[in-house]
Length: 128
Image (cartoon, rainbow, N blue to C red; front, top):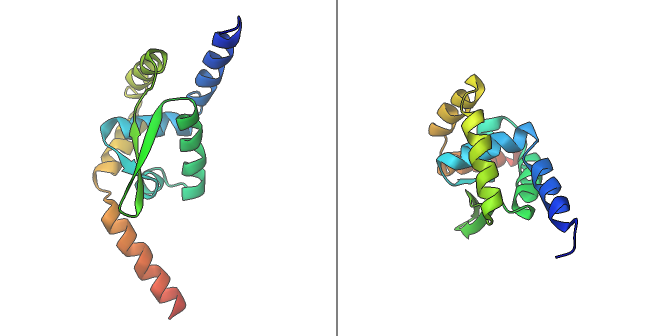
């Protein structure tokens, strides 16, 4: 590895976890694996926005995903010790925030099967 490569990688990783939405995503994924629709519902953001943030976290080695039925399920999965240490620090501090506790409580009441059923019903009603 050339000199400076480590610094560039570290800089990219720090940028990836410096965004408030990405910190919230890491927090939610630290509790359980989730699909994009669950994360969008918990954060009140659009699915494309959530997907864009998750992609950045995936590129930098903080999360991974796997296909389950019709969902892409994201998991917190730091690939390197550096990423694991950064996530640990971020999560410890984030848990001190009142909003973090509210987000985690909101996630408890969200199930992907219910979101999918609701979306299908809304689409059927829109085209009826």
